[in-house]
Image (tube, rainbow, N blue to C red; front, top):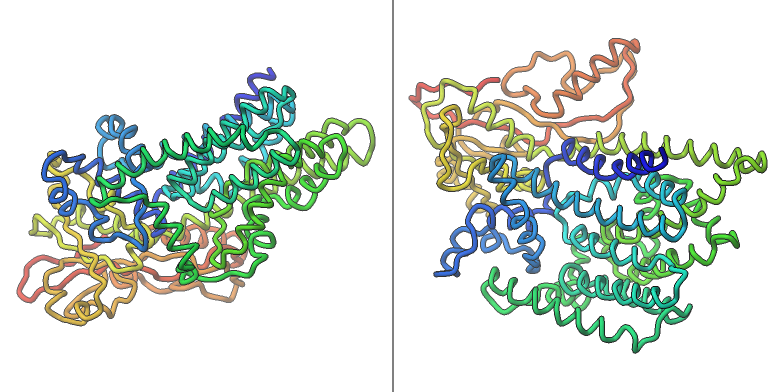
Length: 560
């Protein structure tokens, strides 16, 4: 029975990761490099002749290189592992497949972490860890997102699994070597700022002490050289110039300080905002971690998990530009420390009324955290109007018998590209793959951002459809055939108040498509049963799906 319960609890993590992927299948601009690069490897392969010509004419990063070059190792991994599955189920599911592979890899790392907790602290502590981790929104939601941070997360989580205190000092030394090796690779390949985490882990190991400096120098040097040996040739091949991407990233962010152009946060942001959000459950950060550090029965073990993590966050807070995803790596060890506190309290629930009440409160906090995380998933899924608009456009075109074209030319604006339009979404088939008869119309896409070109009426003549935030931007005779809405906050509607678009008859110009239509149906259903009250997401138009009206053409507007 105990093993069955452990299995079910462990399966919660990968199951929830896949569920989050299915509910929110689109990506945002931060994920664009890795998702586009994975697409290009799967779609166009790896040339061995005329390499520059092939890559520069097909690969997206030559047209949109980004602020700094990024490594291709993550996309190579996803494309290499995912290719047989893509061939098996079809290229139209490729984005789900490659994201699913990343999510399952990070889930596996979390389960290795849980297994090491069980080996050291016992089955009950491991169960608490899994339950606390599974009910945190951010880690589960981002586990399948192709960000450099989430490729690094796989390695840092495995590294932290080796840092869980071990009773045998000889084994602990070996485990520290493995952790340093993994952190070195994560730093050199994916995120250079992880050098700070490697330093804080090393300092703690030297002070406690678990290790000696001479003991970890060889693993560091060896795996640093191995990382360069892997990264530099592969990335130089894809970028067609000698390159170590993370050196560029370090110079851009740390030396030039250019990341501040994306916003600056106060020094305390990570501690007062990001960490509480990442941990989700208030009991974790307010009660369980402090208790684990204070309680003599768990303090030593908790310090090994908490001190290097929070020291990393404190030092990294010096960097002006801050985002929660930059410190995702510390979520597993901090959650493990909270699990130690929860296990200590829960195991004594029969010994006193105080422990019984605290145990009930901790168990109740899991339910609250799950509800909060589920709500955050529902809301977050409404933030991808570009991806929804592209999917809706393809459905509208495929269902319209009036179209007399074989290739539809589409312009996608900046907002659409930032909120879900990817090459996977654009291309349902690989170049040269046969197309079924019911999907005979192909698409070509344009992402021009130059304002001078966009102000030229002749520029718009070549397009059949446009995905635009501003319906007045396309010049010429255009009609809106649908609108995709996006999340715009939480609203409270009283019985006598009207929601956006409520009470109006929908026409092509205001027909709501995608998740906005689902929210509208749910809102109407709830209000019909609550006397007109509604508490939920407020939706506003984000992307307009527009069709070019050409003089003298016989084809009609696309309708749903």
